[in-house]
Image (cartoon, rainbow, N blue to C red; front, side, top):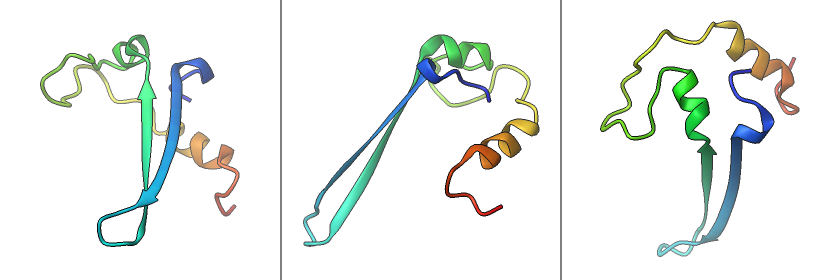
Length: 71
């Protein structure tokens, strides 16, 4: 995986929106040093990659480790 456990955090907020329906929002945070390692910089004005793409196996690893992913 591209990130260690202490480099990534997430949260979920739920509430009733102006239309009366429930909505949920995910908040995902990645430490700046972890982004730099992938060729990204947290102060970039755009999300352009400044380094090589991660290996394709990372996506496959994430799917295998996901508890709700159908195998």
